[in-house]
Amino acid sequence: YEYEWKREEANKNLLRTHTTAVSSRILYLLAQ
Image (tube, rainbow, N blue to C red; front, side):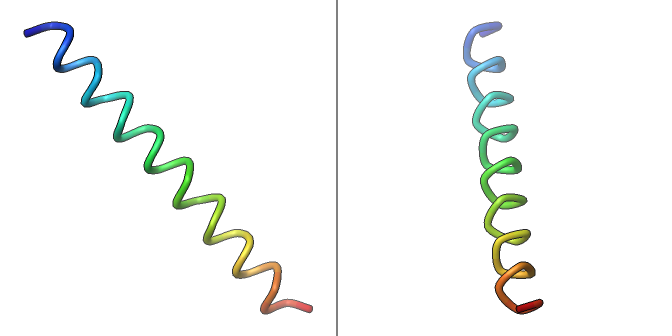
């Protein structure tokens, strides 16, 4: 159970990081 929870947390963190990167890139392109 512990392992499953940690993997879920890792996926959430990865998704958040990815989303932030994409958002900042879009904002960067819009700012041009």
